[in-house]
Length: 176
Image (cartoon, rainbow, N blue to C red; front, side, top):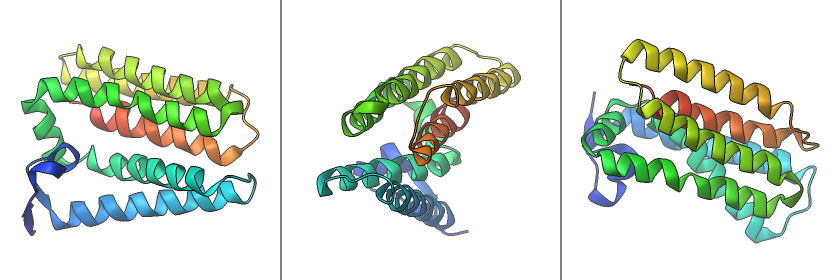
C-alpha cells in the first residue's frame, strides 16, 4: 500500500501520513455525498448560488469526514494532540450553524445535530474503557438518529446530513 506524507496544512484532516487508498476513498465519498445532497436538495428547494456552494462544501466535509475519521492516521494524529481533538469537536458547531442559517425553517434539526454531536463526543472522550466506549458510542448514535426522525423535516434529504454527521463524529471520531 502506497503511503503518502501529508502536508502540514492538511494534517488536521488526514494525520501525518496515510495511504493513497484512504485519500481516494475520503475525497470520493466527499464528492458523492456533496453531489447527491445538492442534487436532491435543488430538486425540492430554490436556493441562491452561494447557499448551494456552502451546502456542497459542508456536505463534502461531512461525507469525506466519515471515512477520514475511521483511518488510523487521523485517529493517531488526534490521540497525540488532545487539545486539537477538543478544538476539532467544538469546530463542528459551525456545521449546524451554517445549515440552520441556510435552512432557517430547520433550525431545530441542525441545532440538535450540532449540540448533540458535540456533547456526545465530549462524553465519549471521558470513557476510557475501549469496549464501553464503543458500546456507548453506538447507543448515543442510535438515540441521535431516532431523535432526528422525531423532528419534523419536510425536506427528507436533509435528514442525511445529521445521520452522516453523527457517523463522522460519534461513531468514527469518538471511538477508541
